[in-house]
Length: 405
Ligand SMILES: [Zn+2]
Image (cartoon, rainbow, N blue to C red; front, side, top):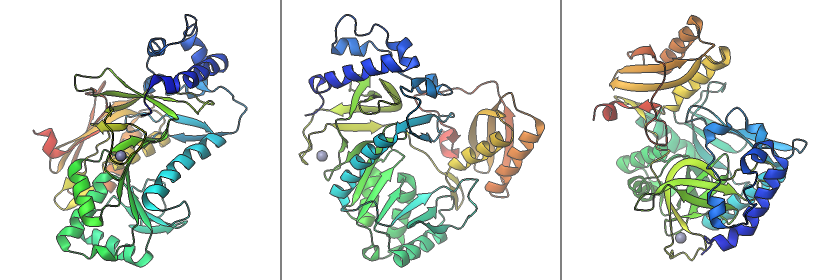
């Protein structure tokens, strides 16, 4: 089983020496760490890297600023997006691991057309519920009413994508809809379904597999690392390769703790003992599938809950899109926010104003929210000095039922 320190120690040492020599951030952080010899306990003395330490100073981690870099941003579900760097070769290396797993599990390749549930953002010119762009069929998550789901079923029959990529909540709603309406699922063209971006609960998996068959795989990943784990035919999530060294930090008596990762191959922008913010545990248990990689159980984080008002259902990510637009027009206007649905039709929008806040920004915020929410919603904007954080993940939307239990 590939979990043992022995398997990783040389690569970790090489990475640490490289990072200390070439990155200004690590020069400071890791100076002297290997002076008294190299061991697992020395490694564990390296402070855990929090995302909040990096936002705004991402470039200080770079070990080579002249290299051709590939950049992308995290989704910012914790309030602050992080700029992530990879070399172009590193990006391809990560892509090969991911496509290798997809090919083994579903027999699909990068050229196969697919469908995905998608939350349109404020920049999209097309607000059509179904759109096809470069062989990818986008189904809007902003409206998941029964009528719309019927349209999606018809569109899938017509365009016949080979596989589907989705967050669990949207696909769970769609699966329930197919089962309730007794729509003929055998006509659907899918060879493979991949869940990503959110926690997949057992009750969701059961329903999704009942609707689509045993072709459902769970992808656990992030912009920082790409694929961290993928579930196997036995339904367990395994680490995807030996190119990430995964630790569970501050674990409780059941072995659950913070999932902390060191990326052994990203040498341009090293992430050493980086806290993903997710809660999980590593299992030594052998899986029926025969994989040499340990099973990772991830829990807690990443579960989003939908906004529901009667029959109207929408993904709370729409609040992020509104705030992004306000901040683009008035930089640093909204520093943090949380939306609480206190009654079914009453929303409290708590905002922490930044330096760029002004009346016109609040007006734009109000206008954008009114556009995106149903007409009869009572919306109140409340200013606060700060918002409290409970647990490792910040919940930016608290739906009605949860707020009252
Ligand atoms: Zn397995």
